[in-house]
Image 1 (cartoon, rainbow, N blue to C red):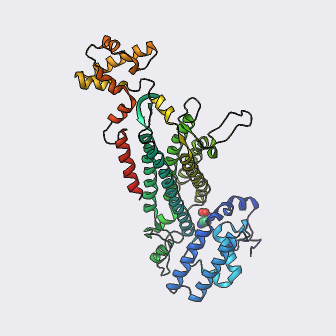
Image 2 (tube, rainbow, N blue to C red):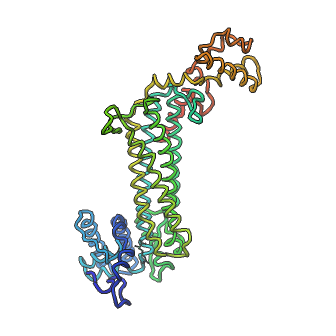
Image 3 (cartoon, protein in one colour):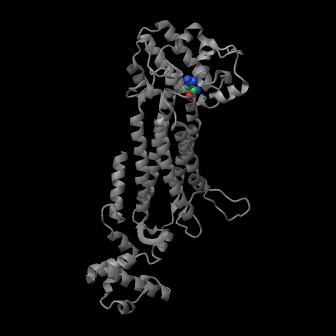
Length: 463
Ligand code: ARG
């Protein structure tokens, strides 16, 4: 089928075939073969529409549609010889179709261009990735809810600047990530709804003189409507950029959580134990159990953000409509999508399998003067002190405890009264970490009651 002289698909006006280097830089088949299924779905919808509109006769369209199924099964079965001379997936499929069914194959490209074809294929592919990302995120959220449920009232240190700040609950910390991944999910959902318009029928750039029915192909391919402007339809890739932007933000959340897991699983923290299934050993240090999955998730954002920057850079200076630059839209999106799905699955597995060490969490929560704010609030409430003065008094008490090498609840009442004579026995009620978290009853706060309410709201949302 391939003409060694000039390209069989567009070589009519060419006397000679391309230089080998030209062929190498021009071809996309090495990567866009991943769009085979979408390409064939799009072509089958197009052929059915051409027949319905009387543009191609029904017998030819049926032969095309059947032949395309054969091509698909050859590709999916690994029995397809991809040709670089045929440049891309679109021409590889069409050329094979011609081998299989002969002349009618030449009618498939009526009222269509590779420009609207590739935009449609790629949109279908990105749309499926958005669905997969949402599925992965939902599974991760469920795993986090499981952790939050189990330890809704377990206390742990809450940090600012990675310094002990105030006690929080394990459930509260898990639910913070549920909120983040929940927003990621809604970002994919929003983008999907916005991008779901079909480019097919925009043809090369200006539309076509054939009486096509764009609603018919849009519906057949699961789009909400045809894209309204043919120039825009073939020349924007903002749908892929939105996917990458949402993926980048999601990867950033994954990376932050991964960083916490790396810290938490260290011998110095021991907040969590990662399962053997999601850890690795060292080839020289027998005692080691390394959080490699978390570290790799932490690192993966580089590739995803890189893809985002790369595609924005490709697109930013392009005049309307299609330019071949846009062939550079695919590889990095493929890689970013693969990377995101893997990172989501690994994080879900890690979260599902990990064990929070309740005792270590509580011990850490009780050190570092974590209830100093509770003490200051008590002085405000019970002694009617202005908060600034209470802050000062508390600071002096912290200093006293620090010098004595103990924690706030270990100071005697007499010691405290040396700093502020009006302090009473009642102060000890707020110095314990459990009372501290239980008192933070404000909406969204760390009190177990509030955390359980957050969990319940999320379970309802997912149901
Ligand atoms: N392989 C091309 C791409 O990925 C398909 C579109 C080619 N269009 C064209 N006018 N040369 O962008």
